[in-house]
Length: 597
Image (cartoon, rainbow, N blue to C red; front, side, top):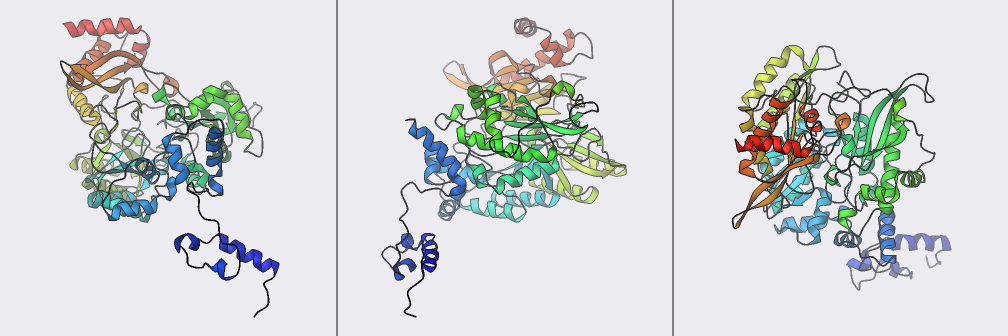
């Protein structure tokens, strides 16, 4: 027993001791290493050395410091405590019913908890629902959590996601544990992370789609959850998969957008369905994703996306938050250099293929997310349910879950248009489901105005917003429905601040909130943009009016839309085509002449 340890045994025990935290937690008491005559583990530094998966982030920060640049406050906070390691701190706050302060507000967002004071003195919890695909059981579970710990409702977001609001300080952990128990994992739901993965909401049921994007959305989601380095970004990041169906995933507004294309026979590539990759979309900064020319097999998309994210982690700006999105790295480098760096993280080169050699994409149905639509499955249809500016109360959530279970496949699909689809309903049951939806105050049809009405949270729940966008959106819809008759669908977007969560620049009519001086007071108002679009109608809206008082907005939009109806070439001319046909000054004069009458 007195025999000395061998070199191999000492090495083993040294490694065991190095991983022990007893030295730090027990102060002067002897550690296991000390009893063996081995060197104690090194004491932790003030700025803790991050583990291997975090080395990519740390090295990127170090490069900026070596260049004599100052990191942003958020980057400094992440050097001291990684956001995924904030659980214990969140528990401490919950136990004493305290809200976070300083950079802790930012770090709590890594687990999806947003302290939204002064708009509401409470937390908003943003979920992660890959592709927007969730089970009826999960929706019922979210309803229970919203009733028990929140404000009794949930909001569908423009990333096909859900938010629970009005969570008190003591219940943050209760909500997160409850979500985990129903299979919703919130890691990276906010802060400098890859946000909820979006996909075609009609994936797998759309008769016109080129490919079902559900597997890709889920694979990307789980890749992120299981690779800690994916949480080391300099800013938020969006990824979307569009399968070429009748309802768009708005992939061209994402940092990485994959859109399905078909290659016919007689090309250099084998015939079949592929994905093209577009990069750098951020319409709040007036830019769409740029087609890279890269053509990918479906099974290669996740690996290529992960490689592109790693390049962004390594080289994205960590000093200026306003310039820390992928767009600005692409502006600085250009596409070619970015793709060269991406290939460094891949086993093979990327294939480039001219987009003109791909078959045309099937046309998007602008309001295909609303109403009854036939599925590719014989005898089945889906119903697009209209949610007033994306909101459902808990009773509505429970009943929708019951209807999806009783008449469908217990599956629900959230959309980027802030509504949901109930799929797999037998055609014979459609009238019954429609009637049941109406009983709970929800609808399955919408006017041309309401079908594309999108509004961010607004000042009622977000400290950045300059106006109560959801309330104003409903006022606009109520007013226009009785005064404007349109035979073309139209998208109207209201966003509360420059973050542009409601993507005002891509609406047929888009509005961004502002404060307007009226005498000595500042009141809620909007700048109004027209002519935006996405996909085949891609375009950034043009400002036609600035500083419109919120109470005047319904009348202004009535004049605008009725002016379009009276002056269009014919009934087939859409609002967007009408707007594109006229210079902004000419449109402004046309509408303001109506205003003066």
